[in-house]
Length: 537
Image (cartoon, rainbow, N blue to C red; front, side, top):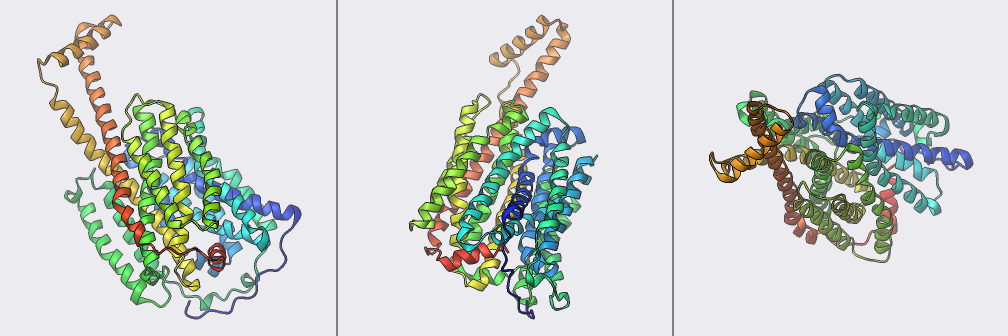
């Protein structure tokens, strides 16, 4: 900020014993429920769509709304902590997240659900970085590696537990329980936070009158990204610019996003997102790479459950369980990456390994068909887990390694925001591309079915006779045979479109791979590493 009071020294008395571990459990629990909710709904999208009477493409807004809210809030977290105080902001975010979770559960139409998911994303956006700050404050500097390990386990467990837990709920209960399950955890986290988390010294007397709020920047960011996301999400189903809504929102996005960039660079001295830091080459290149990572991550999280359930016919529980091995492999992989980096291995090399692994996952998935085995899925998802372990931390570290210390919090916020932006765009691009490719493949398949053609006639006759054998009259059996043939064609076209989409994601990694060589290779020194950790505060 332009004018800012000198921060008082942080609390010197560390929590001990029972209080210390209550803070640890509370912080990890809050982070886990936030991460679970980024993925828990994916295995339930088909059920939610059927229950609410909407299409899969429409219900993907349940995922996208959460991601957009995260994108808006994540870069603002540092400012909001200074404005409200870390404890107040943390407790308020958990309350908002919990109330919104309850609202998602009782929603009886899509847009009510999407609205509460957006609020849930606003509350959840604060929980990761703030929880990490609480964890670090609970340990002395000599034990902070333990804090990082504990928090890292929570980060790994969240996305792993999400689809598994969601699958169990979908197969045994109503989908609303995917959200209701957050309520008791959230209430407990609020009570424990109020009772056991102390305010830091600089939270005691916050002079909010001296903290300027970049209201224009926040508004332009929300309007620009929101409009662009709607255009990408609904463009295909609304015939793009034949729709006045799509046309006008495109105009809004084209106007708001450049205005946001100009305003943050030139229009204000106190930007909500300090885009000036992007003049640093490592940060600029790293941000682009993070968009690709976010695109690949969210595309895989959305597309794999749909492929497993709609094409292969797995249940939601089976779909979730197949994610467990890939999630568990990340635990030793994170430790391995940490050791390699500590021994002086170039972060750029680690990112390259992760990039190749994630691209391999995409191309492997693009070769599967409806006869794919569970073991094949596990192999691909395990490779994906290795890729995520090798790419995340090294890429963040390398992206901010050449920044000045004062720019580190901004740089980390921009990198995290770009990952979420890539994810949000990935969901929209995936839905549009799947719809387009399914139509193309259906046309190609239908063109091969010629009246009187021997193979087509034999297939229809075989299905007709099978229905007659089950007691269906000859006329209805013939009609049913053609309907079954149509369903087979639609399923085949959908499968091929999913394979094309996985291949597209893999191509994003291939095309962006040369950007890795633009990263300046610099080992993160102890002071920078500490600043990266402390930026979570």
